[in-house]
Image 1 (cartoon, rainbow, N blue to C red):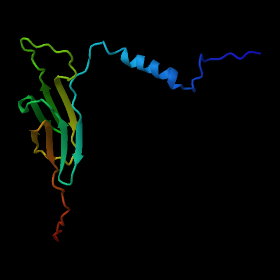
Image 2 (image 1 turned 120 degrees about the vertical axis):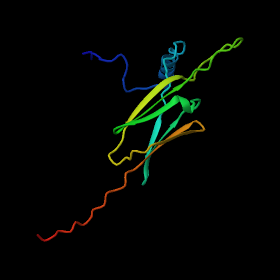
Image 3 (image 1 turned 180 degrees about the vertical axis):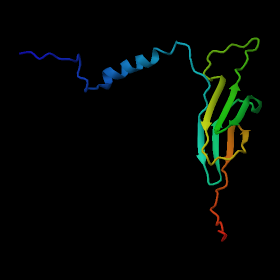
Image 4 (image 1 turned 90 degrees about the vertical axis):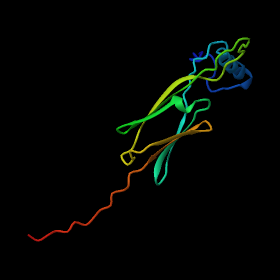
Length: 145
């Protein structure tokens, strides 16, 4: 009696000799297609004893092209990295850097203060939000009536 195989090949067998060239062909088939990438900076968010700090690498972004706003408990950071303009007699043979506008919104915790400081230095944006001072319990004296 012949067994009917549901698979054309053993799904658990992996041979670099046959699979690696197939995987490379799959990767390379997108090489000639236009890039659909856009500029999306990544952020690091750090909490210290005194503040919340956000850091983002923004190479090539000018400080006047970055907008930091707080609305309630929402911190929004928007900006734009402008594309390099083509000059007379120049031709780009390859363009891999991404350009354009970006926008990120972060929800601030309840203990975040209202003062926000933002600085763009050496291509790194640092946003600092001090924490509110902790409320300390206080004794209330009860008067006899």
